[in-house]
Length: 385
Image (tube, rainbow, N blue to C red; front, top):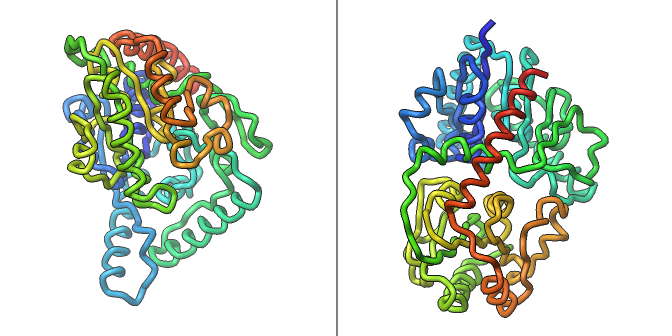
């Protein structure tokens, strides 16, 4: 019988992994894309129409909605209800053998998972599986999710599976992780550890589709996270940090390129005012770096998953989180930080940049292609088990 695989994605990186799966596992693939990101902006329409039997876009519930008596909010809820009805109808018609999700916390995932008729595969969503959280923090998060569930279950009338914690819910048949973790996994069911970031491996499938440009320049890529404007990183601190970075490394790099996060509400003019020559939007950060063609590249960010991913294909990578008072070693397990530099001062940043051996984009993309071959084999094992 022909395999039928349902994919539920919320980020461009999820889309990349689902493309790799559809490229490897023969059968029919139905892609469900949440409106949390601009699918049309990140989609390669000719490729996606070839890999996926059908693509549907589902309205993301607005979690700020709380007033059922408010006309505007009732209209938002009605739009979500119509979208979820479409989703459920498509899933019933498709009758998937496998369901691939990237978060068992997300409410759309748990609506799909409410009926146990398929094998459910959870693929690690960034670094959340390695985040150090206390029991009290986990309980607060669970309470928040259950409160949110109750509201949307009441507002829409749809069944929603309860959330027990990342990777711990009974409906997940297989949890695919990049790395082994010392964090508490006592309640996690069957786990498959890859030993490498699957997102960067999935991009290796597509790198050969790009025409590399020959550039002899040295380039520094800053990967955004959408954290500016928060209590953690206020706007003025964030942009001040960018300007200081550009000034401090102007003698070491010829190009300074900013790659916004898909969810980021950044200001391109303010970024260029900080001395960055280019702001690249509408592309996955890892793919932009790997296909850039520069002869010497380095990447930096605060704590972006893309930063971790690129560090695993040999690109010198460093975090600026310490500059804003955050110690990443206190937030994440060491397994994801092993290739990452975390300088404590700008003097350290300059030293790290100057002493890192040059790596070309072409060489790094070759490493990603090698990971893709391993991922290709691992995917077959995952779906055959």
